[in-house]
Length: 76
Image (cartoon, rainbow, N blue to C red; front, side):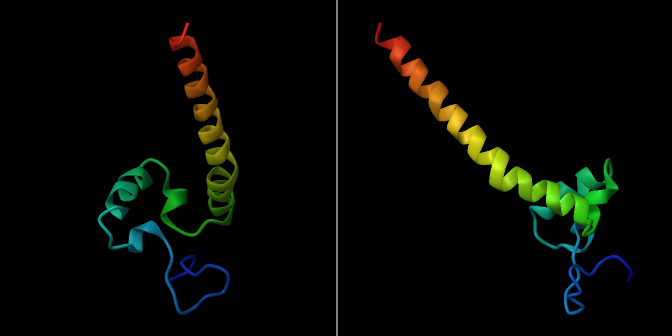
């Protein structure tokens, strides 16, 4: 199976289309629209790591600032 091993790990098969968890079924639906996420595409892995470690903390921080701003407006 070409393209299913990631970082030279021959002992594992990576990709959503090989997953068996219930949560993976949601991603299997997404792979119908974007097949790059079905396997271990390095560009997708890099993009998702950026989303998890950069964009998510910034979004959480932004939401906390917005909620603090809403609390201040409620007191006036």
